[in-house]
Image 1 (cartoon, rainbow, N blue to C red):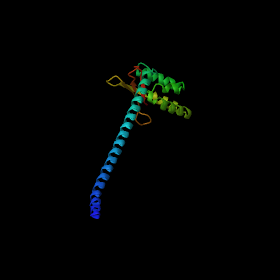
Image 2: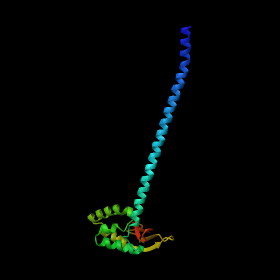
Image 3: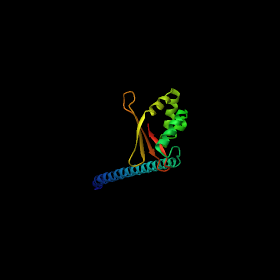
Image 4: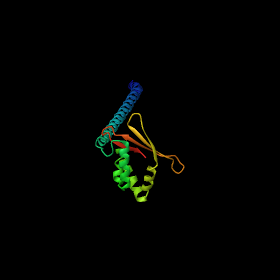
Amino acid sequence: MNKTLKIILITLSIPVVLIVIFFVQDYARFAYDSYQGDKQEQMTLDYMAEQEKLAKELEDKYKNDFDGGATPQETWAMFVKALEAGDTDLASKYFLVEKQEEVKNDFSVGKKNGAIPYFLNDFKLIISEAMYSNGQMFEFYTDEIDGGPGFIYTLVLNPYTNIWKIKDL
């Protein structure tokens, strides 16, 4: 009887042990998935906070950017005058704030390589201009250059300071 009871207990305990293992494994998977979800949610929140911080910093830069003119033509004239004087640092300040460092570096290289006079010659080829209907974007157009298409120089209005800034050359 003792031997039979042991066999019955062992036989009944095997399914119980398997059920316990299944539930423990299932709980471990649930806990891991929950941890990963929380981790992903925190990463998303951190990313969103960083993007908001960057957007606020950019907005502050726009609010404090007064380099340029009240009209696109005035900003363009100031830009060309700075380049003619060889002041590439000043010339870069007439661009959108997020482009100023890149443009400053590009003009510095262009100045060292003697490319600035070529830019200035291209700027003299402007033949027309147009204001977009929303009044916040403006373009200068050049004639054909060496048989190729002309250039479009785009300026946009800084909505915080009402100063025109160069967007693209």
